Image (cartoon, rainbow, N blue to C red; front, side):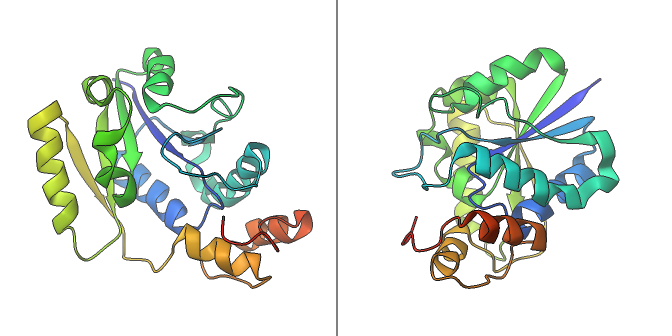
Length: 205
């Protein structure tokens, strides 16, 4: 039976929290392939960074290259960014479900807590298992949401654990906008940001 993981997000910028989550999923679930899926335009964001989808894709390729030990099991996909429209997860799953017997949707705490607001939640839950990546010592809010998703949508949720990390995309963008060197961004990604002057003098994205 083939297992496919899909790990989507804006990845603006990708950081070590994303890398740890992908690594933990690969180690604990052992899928045949994990697709890192930068969104063209996330419908769940009130505003998008001025950083282009192509730049976010390029940064993801650089960030996840540090996991080259997983070989062909890990792949950064440009499928969503090639579709110039809002990136709805249910559409991505519909496209890729023919390629696997079982699909896992990898999500972090922020995504989990707003998951019931996503478009076609019932369709997602009927087609994929949710791999919740816990990066916090306090999972009380997440546990309550999981119980609600199970009761309301029949969600099948598995937990992937990683060590707590003080790493947040919003804070990283704030530091970069001031020309600082934030914790949590790999050297390759930071060099790309500086070379292309991303986030800098851009305020809070």
